[in-house]
Amino acid sequence: MTNTVERASVWAGLLAPILSFGGLLLATLVSPAFTWTGHALSELGAPTGPVATDLTRLLFNGGLIAGGLVALGFGYALFLAARNLVELAGIALFGLTSISMAGIGVFPMPQAAHFVVAVSFYVLLSLALWVYGTGNLLAGERTRGGTTIGLGVLNAGAWAVWGLTGEFSRPGLAVPEIVGAAALAGWIVATAFSVRRRLAGD
Image 1 (cartoon, rainbow, N blue to C red):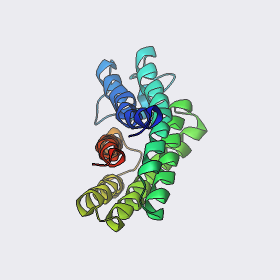
Image 2: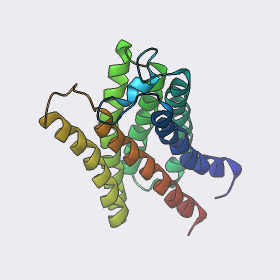
Image 3: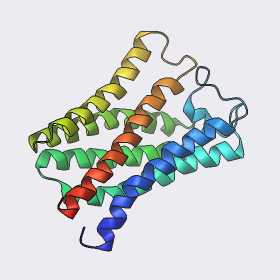
Image 4: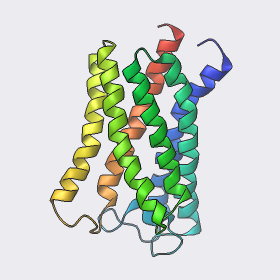
């Protein structure tokens, strides 16, 4: 890496999951009533309800907003390290995914916009991983590309299984939600290290 901006962008890729994924996990721990099989993650950021408190709202909504904005900063390093147009398309979708993630915190349930940004986040997440992973494959990175595509399948598969096994809006929506959130967090961290090596010329 040749300058401070590049380094900061890579560090943004490591910080974003700490803020977003770490924030939501902490919110589940400090909530007075949250259970994985009985609630949706978004209930932690709601203005009222049995699982939400001022602290859970700060951790959940604030973490998603901060994490989404910081993730946008990681896009610069991704852009610099891109090797083909397909990776660039995946990066653009990743940017939209990050904006949608921040939007979940900006528009907490039960606001009408919450449903739109939440659905957009999970749909865009799989699309971003599939497209960027395909770009990895075209660049000769078979393992990384296959893993990235697989994470997109994991996210989509979790929602497919959820939808096929009962009422979509039944209690426990946090289960498929955390699958996608974990997939994104793991991918960002692994990709940040990969991009760092690429920009350093290793």
